[in-house]
Structure formats: C-alpha cells, structure tokens
Amino acid sequence: MYERLLDKTIHPVYSDLVDFCGAKGNAFDRFNEWIKEAYTTDTQIKFPYGNSYGWCVSHHRKSKLICNVFAEKDSFCVMVRKTDEQFASVYEQVSKKAQEVIDHKYTCSNGGWIHFRVTDEASYDDITKIMELA
Image (cartoon, rainbow, N blue to C red; front, side):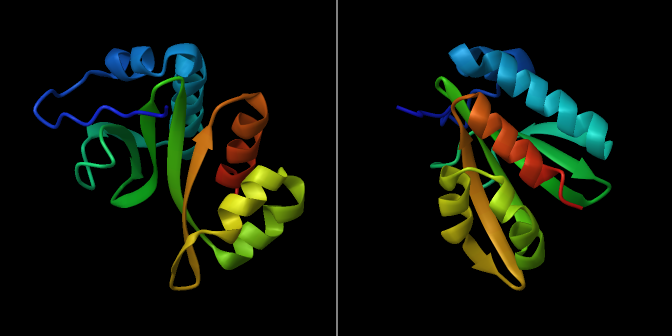
C-alpha cells in the first residue's frame, strides 16, 4: 500500500505520475494545478532524495522550494516545510489526522517538514489549508 515509483532509471512523464495515483489521479492533477496557479510555480519531475522517496512533482518559485508532490498508488504525498507559527495558525482548522502529522513533523529551525498523505477529500482539504499558509 502507498507504493511509489522507485526506479530511478525510468524517468516518468507527468501523465505517468497521474496514472500511477490510480483512483487519486484526478486529485493529484488538481492539486498540482492548484499549487502551480496559487504560487506561480515552475514544476519539474524529480527523483530528489534517494531510493525510498521516488519520483515527484517539485514546485519551485525562483530558487525556493514550495513543496514536493510524490505519486503513490491510489494516493499522493505532499512534503512541505512551514514554520511553527504557520502550523499553529491552521492547527484547529484541520482534522485529527492532520494534527497528528503536524505533531510529528521533522523539526527544522523554527518549524519543520511534514509528509502529508492524501487519500480522500477530507485529507485533500487539510493539505490545501496547510498550503494556503503564507
């Protein structure tokens, strides 16, 4: 469950990532298009962090990473860094699942990284709330 495209030698195109997400392919596409418009990002398909992460759509504005969106079987996972203040501002507005992900973030400086798996419409709503944080 939640397997990823882990073969670094086979460079997928965007439609391959959408297809790999299966039942969540439309949500994966909708989310990537929303991020691209909302943040005016440049996108690139990357294999950024090593063999256990796999292929993703990387969203950048200039040289700043906005987020990475990893294709998974019947889901997708968004990796994003926010400050503690930003997480606190949205904490009461998101589900218990999202709160647990925030509580267990990988701490970094004055905030941290989360890996948020989108499996349904409620989790899609949670990640959009988190991504809307300036």
